Amino acid sequence: MHEAQPEVGGGDVVVIGVDPHKASVTLEARDTREILRASGTFPTTTPGYRAMIQVARQWPRRIWAVEGARGVGRALVARLLAGGERVVDVPAKLSARTRVFDTGHGRKTDAHDAHAIVMVALRDHRLREVVIDEDLEVLRLLVDRRDELAAARTQALNRAHRLFAELVPGGAPTKKSVTQYQALLTGIRPRDGAGRVRRRTLAEELTEARRLEVRVKEITAEIKAAVLARGSHLMDLPGIGPAGAGRILADAGNVARFPSRHHFASWTGTAPIDASSGAHQRHRLPIAAALREIRRAKAEHAADAAQRSRIGQVEDEATRAEVEDLVRREQELVAGHGDLRFSGLVTVTASTLDELDAACAATEAAAAQSLCEVRRLVGQQGLAHLAGAVPLARGVL
Image (cartoon, rainbow, N blue to C red; front, side, top):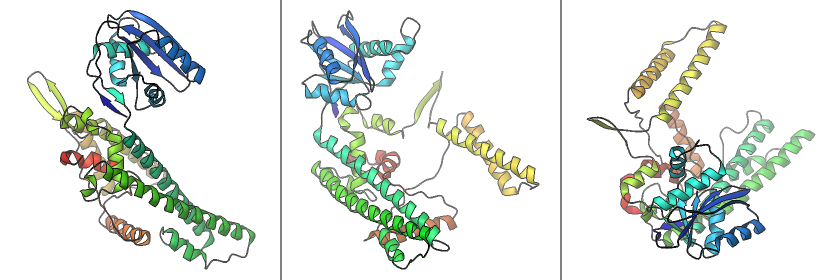
């Protein structure tokens, strides 16, 4: 779904604010003079939906304002659009602000949420009308399905590696591909009953991993065709394949909904945050996540120190330096300075999955020797590139 500018205004236009949930939806309808026309709660069943539409049909000129049209309200929005209704997306942040600053006690109930939603839709004419983009919807479904299958394949291989550790003394030296595991399995002939069950379970896990591997390849080919059909040049960037490009396009949606490239950078979380007080103006990066990470690390160090004290160990200089660095970083963040960290995206390519696993293992070993932390991205390459590089290549979408 993407969004276009609606035409709100005129004599008898009625805006229906909807607070959607899994089991029910609560609505409040008001005209452009903000006069209450109707309110109520309906179950998310077929009879409940028909009753809600029957109430809305008394206003020929109506617009639905749904909170979270791209989230929890996606199913309701799809039904409304299929029925020819007009729908605008109300961000939860706007409705929350309206509810907090409205008159009254400001409690969060479904009725108050619906009231806040309809008031936002009546007063904020910058809301976007939701329109179904079939190509993007198909792309989103394909990318989500590929991520699920890739994660399932990884889990199957992890279970296979655990079973190898139980069957073979010392286990498999490193995590291998399905083909390598199957070659190792041919030489295992356990004699005991538990070993034979482990071998049979291991063979089933490898068969499942192979099936998932084939399906992932098929969906990746579909994603590549869908990305190329949209005319995107994202795959021209080094390190961006079909899965990454599909994820970026599906999550970003129609980029025309962003007023400028700066709004897009803010949406990705890579834009500096304005902070000013009087004549002092500055820009800072979000520090909440950095503070949480620092305090979590401090808690771990404190727990380790207590354990060392109980068993009589002495804190070494390296640990003391790490704690001092954490304290210094926390002090700088509290003082308003940004937390900087150097990171990069490492792309490993190979002609086959076996060669790819071997190359990844070599890269991880080299990183460990260099005291660098690396993490494999399974279905997250697009998000990583979106956060780290896309704002620098704004013209590729």
